[in-house]
Amino acid sequence: MAQDTYWASFEEISKYNVSLNYAERLWLAWYTYMQNDVLATGILSFTMHEAVYFGRSLPWIIIDAIPWFRRYKIQQNKVPTAYEQWQCAFLVLLSHFTVELPQIWLFHPMCQFFGLSTTVPFPSIYKMAFQIAVFFVMEDTWHYWTHRAMHWGPLYKNIHKIHHQYSAPFGLAAEYASPIEVMVLGLGTVGSPILWCAITKDLHILTMYLWIVLRLFQAIDAHSGYEFPWSLHHFLPFWAGAEHHDVHHERFIGNYSSSFRWWDYFLDTEAGPEAAKRRREKKMAKAKKAQ
Image (tube, rainbow, N blue to C red; front, top):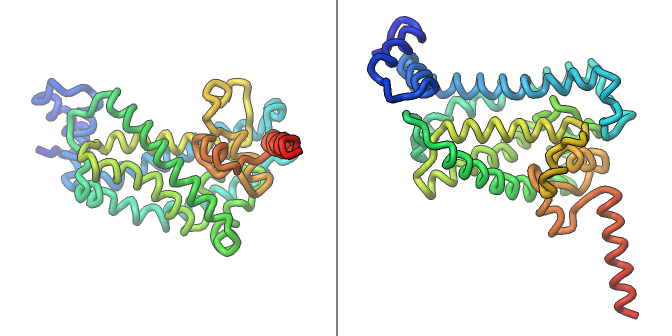
């Protein structure tokens, strides 16, 4: 039974659910205390999104303000001003409250319709890791094709151009985009797990939350504008990262994928000096063969 406060509900639940771990008891207490699953999921989802988005963007804001880090800036002569950071933050917040919040409020009914579990105990770490890996691949495919389509003349001019306001991206600009683009590209993030659940009937909403957190980290880091010796793509060559996406913003074409490089590699849509060099070498090799 729900108590007067959240922590009273937690203590009551802990008495009778000793088999649950601490995180599972916190989770169950939240839904018990709220007594409204739509409200409980909506508040949890929106708060998580805002905390992760702005919390992960904050280190990049600090890094942009410290000259020592300029050596790692990809476009060293284009550092965002404080005004640009504040303007971007305001417009992103406006988008979150006017575009994303209404959608998040419908999140729990959608979960129920497709059969996402919101109960305890949680799935195993191994199951969640496998499913999240699948979601990364699914979303990257959706992102590549829809993002590439966004660069078609009319779509670019009327929708995608807003996101390209900053030719040198920074962390906060990851979700700086037209409401239409937010919904279209966001469909890949939310739709991938939903499609998985519709087919397999096996997905917990916690797995979806962890996936969204990791996807937010990926998007913000890709827009950070910094390339470090310890950047992930140095260890996972197929990972995209900031170096991959920064070139896209600088040149306005190519490098359409979100998380991985393989779609751009196999479909010859890579951008940058190295990609141009490989194309020239291929042409020269073909010309020699033709002779």
